Image 1 (cartoon, one colour):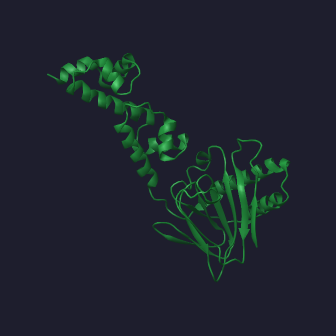
Image 2 (cartoon, one colour):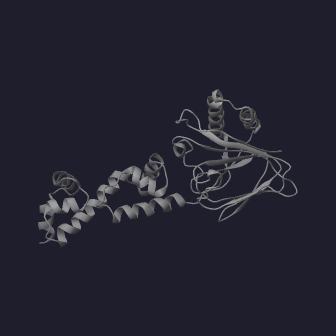
Image 3 (cartoon, helix red, strand yellow):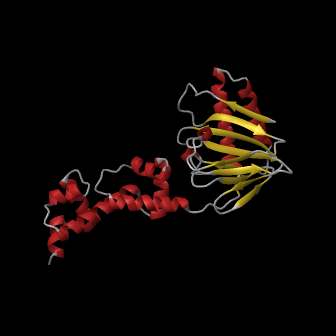
Amino acid sequence: MREHIFFPKPLFSRHSCFPDFIGGYSDFPEHAVNREYQSREVGVDRYYNLHLVLDGKGYLYTDRATYELTQGQGFLYGPGIRQSYHSDKDKPWNIRWVHFYGIDLSQFLDGKGLDEPWLFSLSDIAPFRELFDQLLETGRGYQVDDEYKIAGLLYQLLTRLQATAAQLNVPINQTADKIRSVANYIRSHSNQPFTLEEAAAIANYSPHYFSRRFSEILGISFPQFLLESRLLRAKQLLISTQLSIKQIALDTGFSQSSYFATCFRQAEGMTPQQFRLLHRG
């Protein structure tokens, strides 16, 4: 078996998930994939890539490990990350896959596959085999009205996967490294108008996922961190320069000096001018 089925863009543009293409291989020991970071091959830079091994075995490679995958195991790649896997030559895997996209998938999938492939194991693959069979069967004779059925089948597959799969690989802490890097960038550019969406885009995460992980990793919310960064810079300028309070407010990212004064008093228990006089002796 060597099958690829591609789908047109759906008429409804806000499906939670929708396949770009689906397929499967069996009795094909030559099956091998090696796609570099942000490769545009088959939309790797934009789509998720989910594979499930029905029987046989194969291998997946990351920068730090090689994983052997057998019946009932599989993997999920998020958009843009490097992909490297292949079938075993002697016992080629019987595999099904779906490349898909959707609205707020990083939130729906709880960040799985964004930094490295998510490897999983299923205790019962029968429901997943059935869902893949239905996806393939519907795809072979796809008509416009099948759009909602296809989206529903994929949604069932992904929600069941979320609920029943056990993780095989322990993720490395790339998310923490990314978010700390973004935090350092924001700290040094805090005078610029930053939104949560803009900060999340730097890390290539959804705003919801970025906001949650930012708070978990740094122990402070993104808005609090941005405000803290601006106030730290303001304190430095109050002590080391003769700039007016209004100019310092503008130079540290505050649109109004009155708002700057309010935030400063709440954080320091005194006005900016009192702080300047105190620390200048």
